[in-house]
Image (cartoon, rainbow, N blue to C red; front, top):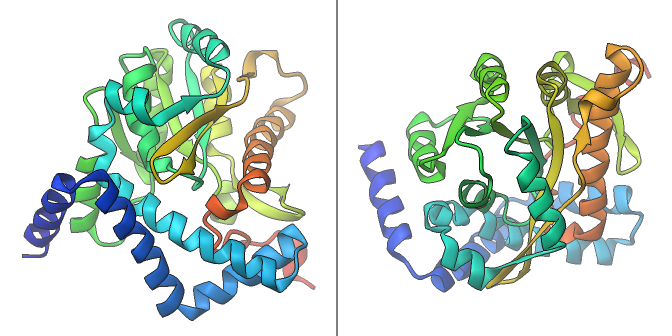
Length: 297
């Protein structure tokens, strides 16, 4: 019954007008802001500490973050509607000539795309389906605890050339994909377990950074490409990206290379969060896992 309910709600959502979903997402974010005070306090306090702003400014940024992320959550309903008309009418590209050069590189090299819970991250899969030339593309995700809901979301996120891969099952599938010169995309800004992490500065405090994407990129000799889809206004987006890091050109031993790759995508996320703080997922406990030396203090 629960699965049927989710499917019905997804069908209703997919049939809704774009503007209606955006307004509903805004309302969802406002509801979470109002109804979950613990997350509201966490976001405000974290913004104060990490961005060095006063409480009034932190509250303004946090409130906007909740409504922006409410939109992001519901944009999963539009993942499969990202077509060339959507791209033309709604997505602006920063440095289109450089983007085309990077897309051309994808024909001959494996790529690890690194993004964050920032802006309209749910719609990036649709853009990769349209624009990335590889036949083999993946998005690696952490499933929700509700397996019925996860199956519905997974279907909504999937595209003919983009497969959704669960985090716990990812390593062999990602390596196989990259060895075929495919593209594998990761969200690299969430907290992770200590055994998965390297601890790196992020917004002024060491954070547990998932080292998995870096390790896989090194093993596959891939290019690592930070890419983000930022919301310009309720109807338009901007695709931002950095030049890829070529893992075959890194010096040092394996540990130093691993550290360099993880630092590269962590710093790329930090730049975007500082540039668009109201579009990041501040309600997440990003610094929950602490370095061992902190635990003894």
